[in-house]
Image (tube, rainbow, N blue to C red; front, side, top):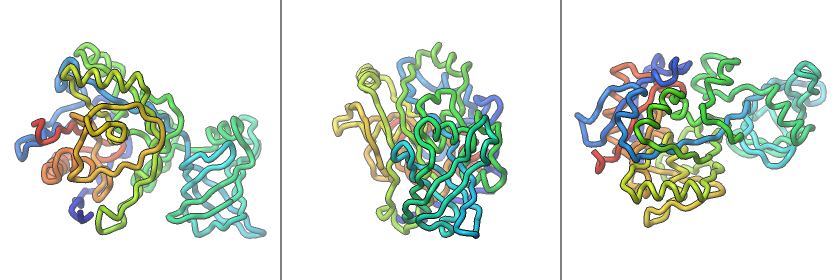
Length: 361
């Protein structure tokens, strides 16, 4: 399909720079999937009433690491400032990163992150450029390894805010908690599963009282989630692979929910992509351990998901393509136009929508 079909206008003023406070005060647009009159304006605290006893929420328990690092590249007597985002751990001391501007880096360059001895007695966090790839990809070999490297990244790194936020304000200490879901426990993501940011203890208690079960999967969100689609046809886009886990116990429990007539409600596109990667042609969910690069566009036949709770996504992004595949492109364009008109807050720190496919309307 043409990528320009997934374009829409968004006023910059609607891009949220901070989350709602409290988190469950975020607005919730309900999109039934059956046409013009299928939109309802709600708030996140309405979610329990919108679900049924026996339904199951599937949440991503990945934890975001402070993967954004600023450093100084040295090459002889010449230095330059660079920023990197950790993307994939290769071993105890080596990471694949996205560098900006990557053109300032050559193989063999040294980069110093942080100042020696300034943070909790830690030494400097230094690395050597081992290899360069395309689109800003660089392989770094750090002088530290294992637990020492982990502790230094925690000390010197910042939350890797999306570009549309980072361009308007720097990350700060508040983002350390704001850009983390209440379920975060499995360390490894460099971007938050943002639909999960809307949950609070009070909301979870209300869902429990409603008889909605909760189940956890892990998908470590990579920086590829922010990369634009640069090709004219969706068939030419290559997704970055992300590591995910669905345990045998969770697969068994969710299959039981389906067998009893309950609905599977994916919290976030990350949960959806992982579940669809693990579902068989017969709709049975299997345990999963490994990488997925599933790319969902209109025409995809969903095997396991019944509803999707998600944020509002960027134009021409793979995530807007996914929601268009789930509820229909024209339906989602009408929904987003309504959200703009009603001044919903967009993107990672913004409001949410609850989507159903057309046949579920």
